[in-house]
Amino acid sequence: IANGAAAMGQEVSMFFTLWGLSALKKHTVLAGKNLPQKMMAMMLPNSPDQAALSKMNMLGMGSRLMKKMMRDHHVESVPSLIALARELGVRLIACQMAMGIMGVTKDELIDGIDYGGVTTYMADAVDSRLTLFI
Image (spheres, helix red, strand yellow):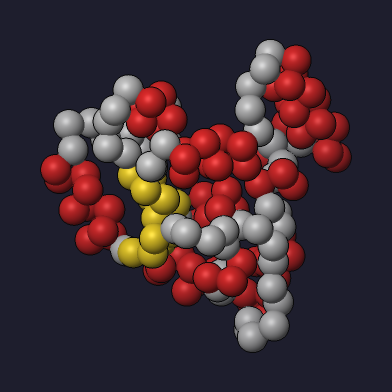
């Protein structure tokens, strides 16, 4: 949706919080995290390519099947869609509060993104013509 809007010339920002931060990860770092944060890091995917399909994961079979179906229908992967969004000028914002809670560091996330909190999100949302929360 963001890429479609950006391709139509719309100004687009995306706010990633909690589990959504996984879409921006390039790798996981355990050093410097407390025990709960390390446990959370071990439960979450190291990158979007390693994300499961929740209850449809079926020991990894669900993810492999979905990725195959996406390729068969010429749908880009999440990392490719994120890269395209960046090329189109979509502003990607990682939630600093969620990062702090989950122990996610800037080193773990892709380069060239913004960081902010609810006020950053609301500043964009208040001025927008359309807001989607998925």
